[in-house]
Image 1 (cartoon, one colour):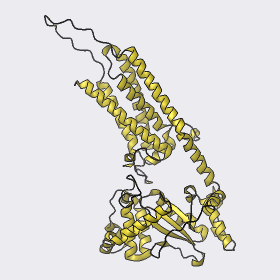
Image 2: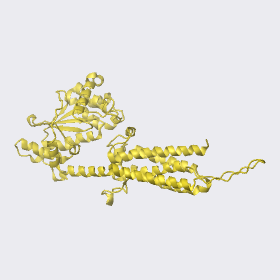
Image 3: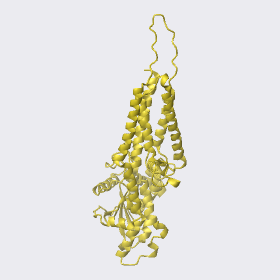
Image 4: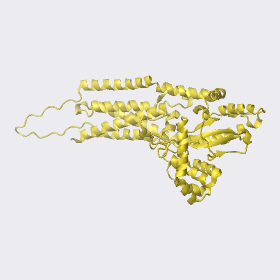
Length: 449
């Protein structure tokens, strides 16, 4: 096989690979999840600056063109992932339908190089945006840009060069004139296929209502978070459920009146960035509304296949380790030990995420006996306790974290982090106590905005 033919095939594979990645990025942008589970690898959510977080990048104002910043901060613009999908669709079809033209048709290759030149400029711009405007970066976005660079190199190597003249040998047939490739019909069919593909992608986007669903959900979340009474009413109308709680489950109390305590059951995951934010939110903003009378009951639900069979694809690869470390601390030093390690795990979440936070290190930070912690960590008792919590989560329909239940009623995902919902809940709480709500528990005006 000629060298040029090998390069052509490599180019087709590169373009198709970039097409698949772009499709998954678009799916992630519009629906919140990749179409293929393998793309979750190396792209876990993280709140740390400089960390890899595809979700954060694809949810940023810069994930649209033009970007939704400055005067364009309202809705509008095309998802950058959609531009990538169209770009690599065009390249894939052209390379399959036309490939390397003959010398006489090199002007077609010039147009292709010009097209790829614009693509390279776009790649350079979006890489610049990712590392100067955003706090996180997207590994799979960089993969598409890298594939684009490799495609450009292949196209340069496929430039139609002048064939070297050969010395005729007496008796040989006269050399045939070079064939003009591609024919006009081939170019026309390829361009038609490109138009159909782009039109099909547009129709797919419209028929699946991805963009409309994304915008609807965006509006829904905004409206809901501004209406504490509506969120509270939705919670109040939710049927209560029974969740297994034993004397062994860790409870965080803040010295409030036990007779006035409100039980809040939280299914959580130590590798989950949102859970980390939720823990801080509950302590700093929600507890004061109830004069510290919320009792936070922690139940394990690690989104990790290592101990949770309900997780069907790799996600939080060290969440089970985190759950067992916390459970080991509870067995070594009781309720206080659990909550001390709870805070340590969230503070060192990036180390846990990278798999470099062994139980001995946590024990040293917490001032607990390392050997006892290791023994408790490895024990079947700890593993069974975590497994029982996971089973409880499945029984009440928990699929993600954090999931919160108040007096047995599940709190909507939108309401969980909405301070106005908790304020409406606090208002009900103080009325049930038949006492005036203390001024110190009321939301300040700036907090309501």
